[in-house]
Image (tube, rainbow, N blue to C red; front, side):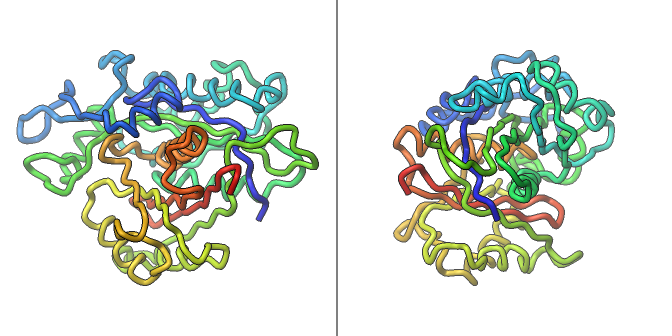
Length: 335
């Protein structure tokens, strides 16, 4: 697999207008759910985490654009990614799984509308996947198979600020509330990274390097045994010890059980406080759905860039509600 050099990142979240502000606010544990305009099945107001800069009346497809456009522009204009402007770009996007009542423009127009708003032309290889949490890792795997000296913009966007979607989650006891102790806090966000697939000569040092990506699927009907995640953590490219893990636990009981099973079979992944650091960003960011992998990469990149990373490399772990699982290993410039 080709290493991927992270040239720049961009982010838009309830914690910040850009990647740096998001990272520092997340580091300071400033996230806090607040009442939404929507009510659950018990009649109580649902708590969510959402962007303060956006009106609560903006829902659905327009909200996706308002989240994604500034993050995409930031990634395109940041650092050594500036030269990507004026050229057709390969844009790869992770979006949420299709849900009942969604705006059909998510599938048909999101990529093209994003490109138009960012004033860029799309390369024919541009694409979108709808796999939930693990979608971003799947896209990184696709990028690593490209050949030549190529810049690619890869990211994710998602928002639970949608009455139909929240109702469906509440009916399934997925939202954290008095009805469901093990539910998650719905959130939203978008993030993008401009990555360079290969370079004959580096003109500037990357912010970070994605050393490898691995994806797998749990056997159908057998999610609880964590077979795929167990095997991913045994990837031969994994270092002998992994002291910093950034994983997408969202307070869901089955996801936690899966992680316990997988790490219990792979002792090199340090999960105890005395052994290493496990960042659980959902506590202050909420569940950001299909934007998870991209936002976690932005967080790790900013932490490495500004000197508050727990270690000089991180393993990012993502698991979709479906069978898809993905990991990727990120090292800092001086690793």
